Image 1 (cartoon, rainbow, N blue to C red):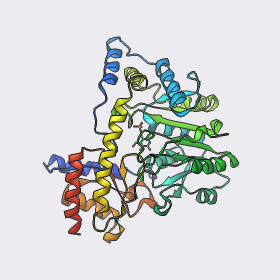
Image 2: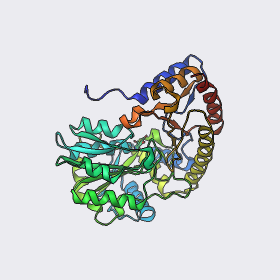
Image 3: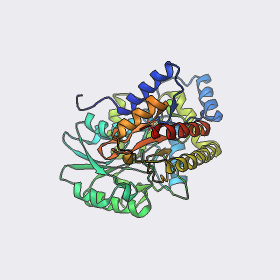
Length: 383
Ligand SMILES: Cc1ncc(COP(=O)(O)O)c(C=O)c1O
């Protein structure tokens, strides 16, 4: 466990909460969760399930209704065919799906290529499973897209899996089809599994389009498609996600799931059925609001002295470089929190190659972001 430190992001959250309890007007831009309430028709469906007594263990794979809804969504929105009986497992958030993948497929010392910076959980789920995360550097000059040449250079006989995340947390990069194709070719050549994390698929802007790497020729048999309800439907606390993959792969993952969590919360699963089968305007409304906030935060950051802010095409994060301020990203993040009560996350918390950047989540209200940008401008001038 010494190899698995306490999360840097959680540390920022704890300090921000502490300041909040002291009565300081903290603006939270550190946490990656939509600030909206879960849409009413989804809550109503979960309430109904509770009232109908759907309070028991469910199938390890999830209730048939949710698997049918997921198969329908993957077919109609992503053009992917999965059998709802055996090729889909419903998990405790996308996070559990990532954990299952690592526990199920890694032997001691197996290597997994992970874009760096990244959502930290990949690195530590790999470590917990006895595997070795291998950082693939993302460079601002390459639009923070995982460079196939870097991937090829880092492949070894122990490489077992590649993580592909698009849209990307924390950089907001979205991978186009050609790019995915180049990564897919390497995965096929070296017989790798690909964990495709598509949790931010609905949050794309400026005409960017989300593609599923699992839909490319020859990729179905090796892709673990991970997605969930947290971000698209503002359901982070419901803890519902899923993995879709060929039956042989799900068969292995379900055994880890069976002996750890058994099944996700029964009545929450019925809420998620309504998320996928009900009206989708709530998703579009949230996306539109994110787009509006994105315009604001980018415009303000790009005009700020000492800050260089690339344009993210997806997710809900800005990931500006703070190098020109002449301080480390940790110092900048700590200064912003202590001096201006703005909670952010230093890029180094997402991996070595995130150093020099700060992540700001625009999953907070337009007014709070506006206020945070005013405070940030004043506060950075003091550095
Ligand atoms: C890339 C990525 N995948 C998965 C998750 C977790 O999703 P869930 O809430 O479904 O576990 C996050 C949360 O921040 C994330 O950024």
